[in-house]
Length: 238
Image (cartoon, rainbow, N blue to C red; front, side, top):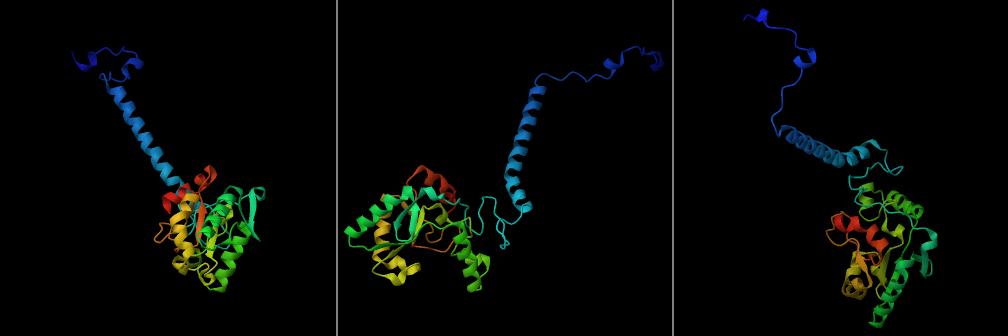
């Protein structure tokens, strides 16, 4: 039979239908497609924060720096400002989060019983005050933003704004206040041995992964669920 003799009366729908698929192929195709979509979703999840940061404006006016994919700005993680109704005064002109107040005072009393004069130098700072400390001192010292961020967090990125962090000093060695020489004082030695029992942790130890300068005087309270949640990222990246 020649080609011209082949009947052409097969319906179009049947003539254009796909060939039967071997058993098992549809399931394999579905699985491969699902895996491809999963991989694409994972890639977008990883890429999106970076794309967002590249497209979004600088987070702080006057500071030409952008946040990293993990939220950090110049090494510092973002923190909210504590509401005033959660602040408690623990010394003249110095307030802390109410959760940290009694543990802090108890730690001071215990240090005093051991002959150590533990002093409170700085506690809660508003974002507005942190802005002054960052930009005004940066200008006075002719520092770049990166240089200033080594020793002071940008506004909105300071642990002090949570009310859960404070600077400590030694009353017998006031000349070491806010200096690395504080590590040579009786107060720091006592803190190293006892602060954990009161749920206080050194925020910026030597060689911390945040890249912030070593600050033996800066401690934060981690003795509540709220505190643990706030500082969870810092514990992993600090």
